[in-house]
Image 1: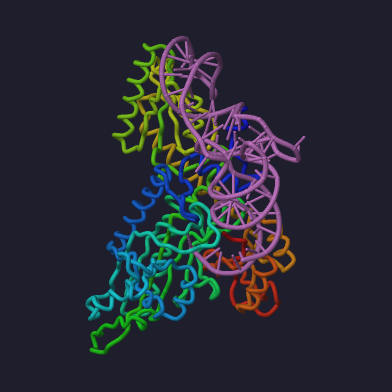
Image 2: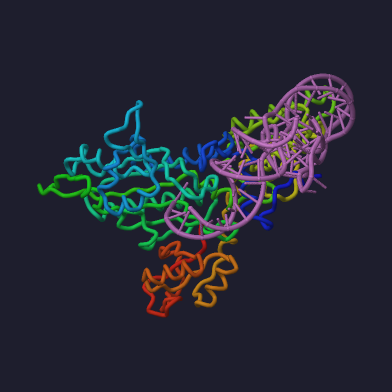
Length: 482
RNA sequence: CGGGGUGUGGCGCAGUCCGGUAGCGCGCCUGCUUUGGGAGCAGGAGGUCCCGGGUUCGAAUCCCGGCGCCCCGACCA
């Protein structure tokens, strides 16, 4: 049955589709430890591409990488009141080492603000030491109750940037800058449109002054927080006595930011672009941008075709394309097509005896459309062109999907109907009161994803809170979320 | 932690009601024939039937007690 080989469709059961896709494409597997996942080579390759792009963007904005320890003295976490309250319930604690009970338990980092700012206190003395712009790539542990591969696991990989500045304005600028970096990455590399904006107090990072986020809409119309950037103010610098001497000779506490994205982005990628055949990976993030599938019957054909296919491979590689020749024996070409489609490879080239004779290859696009016969002569140019177009088209179609799943200026009734139908994002007025927010969440499961930045706001600012009718203080975007 | 479900080769399941010494599909290995959209045939490997105890001549199956996992509700990048 061909059907037994097909994935559950997105329409039939989105989360079954998601899980099956990950298994089929061998992106990740469940670990023997509850809530943890093993990232398999195919999945890790995507993360590596993400890391490469992001790391360069961090360097380009003046940051350096460093590494801080996995273990944090439990007392450190407790120094910032709101922070400990936020994270204590979900920390893993090490109480024994070397067979003996530790004098002070060690927390496995759920995030590294505390240990990093403890170190910054030693490193920063003068305004001349500022700004201090550091990033680290690390694993963190948060003892989650319910986990999903890539989206929420007990241990996950991420990067966390931690900066210290002389003024509040500089810290604010940094927090906003890095939010912009994330947005650029998500749009240009992941082809994933995001809304940027500010989080309400209830969704703010524990210990931050303000939290900004990038929010993306998945194909099941649930929102996903894809990245966050925090202006920490002086909350941690006061807790850890991170002080510096100003040019005027005064002593002041530094202003901090922190910002992060995680392997959750791989889950976002799956849910934004994936289709019923499997993963769809934007060319810029694909491990293999092109796979070449040779087609042959006889041994003679095999030799000729493989030689031609390898020539094509070398030429494409030389032009900067990540290309793989799938020369596996004993597997029919069709089986290879399905496998590579499931893994999301953007472009496939089929090379058979007829192509070799004609000096051409057949190009198939992961996103569909007719196969196309191309002359080998100008192949590299055509391949780059096809990748660029696909990269742009993926963004455009995701954007169109999001816009068609968004309603603006909603009344309470429209809001309820939209949310009830899992139809996507709702833009509407908000009175700014936590009670209203909590009430809405309890009754509808929808939360305020962001108070959107200006460019995402509706042309006309709402006047009234969609829920309670009081004057609106900000337009808000609601959705059910992951 | 409450409600529901489920544990049987790598994966998905049947067998359990009514006890008789474990089977199917996929995958895997070998060989031959195949290869322009998921190959066919033949042969083969692989299982403490979640764990412990009990009943019985005999337990995957019945009884008692544990444990794991999944789904739904209270936390979250």
